[in-house]
Amino acid sequence: MTDKNRKNIKIQSSKYMNSLFVWNFKASFAGKWIEFQDFREYTPWDDAKYIDWARSSMESSMIMRRYKEEKSSDILCYIDMRESYTYQDGLKLWLMRDITDLLYHASISSSEKFGWYIDSKSVVEYIAPKRNPSSLLKIHNFSWDFHEITDTLSISALMNPKLKRSIIFIISDSMNIDEKSFKTAWLKHDIIYIHISSHFEDTLSEDWISYLRWIWWNISIDLSDKQKKLEYQELREKTKNEFSVKIKKMWIDSMFLNEKSSLPWEFLKLMKKRLNYVK
Image 1: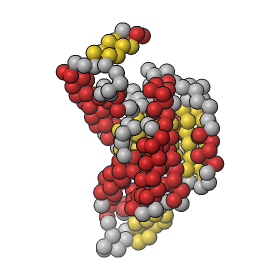
Image 2: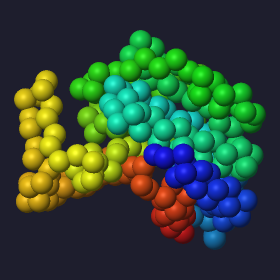
Image 3: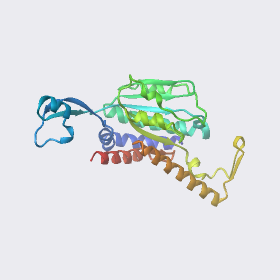
Image 4: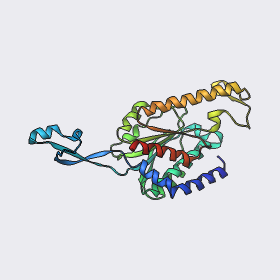
């Protein structure tokens, strides 16, 4: 991503942060859980599904359970660091930073705490949610230690009992996930999966290259062959769709972004979709 494009993204981000963007961010990521509050007697206009039948039989009257909704949650970014982020002059690293900057500023503008999980080859680093710039500075100064490209993404670290219920944005370029850890983490957290890629990776369409060869995989591609490129693009899109359907069955929202995506608009679309869930 060029400096000019990055600057344009920041200008767009600033514009939407102070109006529609922030309002939608707070409304669509406000927390989805309810907690038990107390008991009270049933009245005719109450929803019968909240009757506590065991307590009702003990007290010989209809007793209701009352619940209260959690109104806000900490915002966390779970960053899956992979060797592929360094390709194309670290384009995905820049994209990841632009996404996390956007999420950070939206969270802070919405008066939410923002923190990190950085999943590297040697350790999963946790930076506790805060409402100040220190967490953002830590991620920009973090010493990267990348996973192998073929590693399966597991998010078992999110099941730390000390971690409160949170809204977690997982950022990765992998579609190879440990489904068990995702299903388990969803029971506690609200998860959004952000898949990052490059435009070239999605389409094989760039003016500066006409032939591609991966020596270690013994693969060669003639990029002037339009039919082969079309077949690749269709296969790539099919793979993304299948992955999106798979994690949707786990009740996890997903986004697919590359360096040509308009980040504010893509996030606004996601927020609008989530607001429709509430309605």
